[in-house]
Length: 240
Image 1 (cartoon, rainbow, N blue to C red):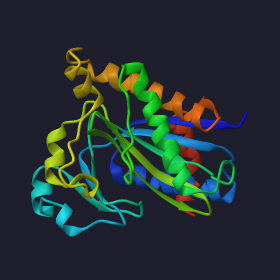
Image 2 (cartoon, rainbow, N blue to C red; image 1 turned 135 degrees about the vertical axis):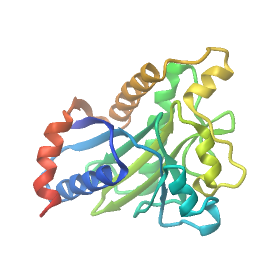
Image 3 (tube, one colour; image 1 turned 90 degrees about the vertical axis):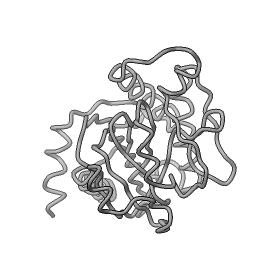
Image 4 (cartoon, rainbow, N blue to C red; image 1 turned 180 degrees about the vertical axis):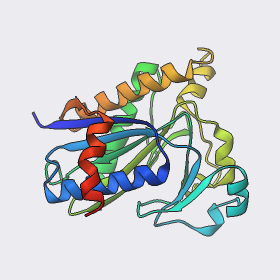
């Protein structure tokens, strides 16, 4: 069975992770990397602006963001504006769709399906919204998705709120969706009377469930990859 390499990067600055995933995508396109890869990471607070960004959806000025310790990046992914920060699981999937199905809409639905399955062990029923991309629970949005692709190889990916400080989303109109209510796995568990979860334990279990769900949905065997191994492999590609 083909593999899905899964690399847990821990906490990493957005700029560093962006350079890394671009290097890995380049290697996947060239064939230097012969397996699909899922990078799992947490970022310090950062707002990213996708290709569909509209200025009115950034509610805070760059100066205010800087004062709050929030970085700001314009990137090549699809979608509008989103936030990444502590307590949020970000997944960058470098997937060669030539191995699967050459259809980006299909791919987005598969990413949604993986996240929906990953929520099941917590007793949460994930939902889709017609005409929108992402995952909701009882009308509240838990996961945002935005991707980019070249030569049918994807990068960028998803952001799943686990124990995220949801007040950061007041700085933006998340994904450009007016009146959207953001939530997290931890918040939804509290709504069900399960009490505050240990943040580190909840994030660790979410990582495991997400990786397993991606393997199931894409019919790939999960193979852990150490960050140092990935960084060594990507370094010469990034500087090429």
